[in-house]
Length: 82
Image 1 (tube, rainbow, N blue to C red):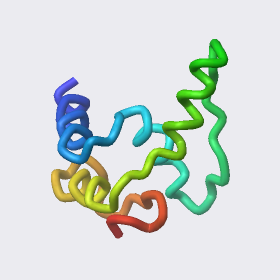
Image 2: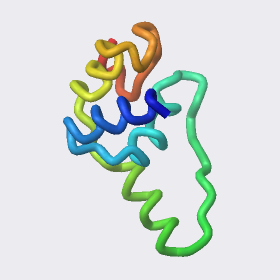
Image 3: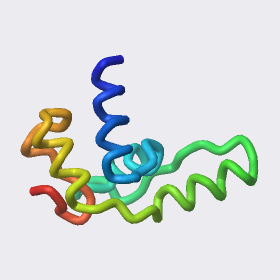
């Protein structure tokens, strides 16, 4: 839970919703071409779509790596933070 709180703090530092980071992170790996998050309602589907498109600054991924919350070599979306 401490790890989650630290990641939530980085999200707050960059005004990035945790859900957006979670949905976009797997897309940083070249072997992943899509993700299929489940939705229980049309509203949840619309929220997922917004979160996948939410702009996440490179500095967010860099801070996660700088704080050892992600491995330095972990691929991130758009090559940010490499």
